[in-house]
Image (cartoon, rainbow, N blue to C red; front, side, top):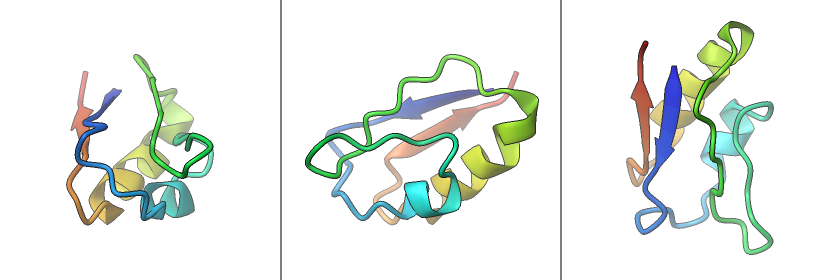
Length: 64
């Protein structure tokens, strides 16, 4: 699984971080700055929940 962040869509709600604290990273201004090419299997559920929680649809999950 891979996570793609469309940084121009992120509005800093941080809902991704609330649902996926071990997957998503925010920058100093509170915007998603995650750069993960491979989500470990034990974190895939967090990655999905975080992406679904984004009101701006700024996160895309690519399944392997």
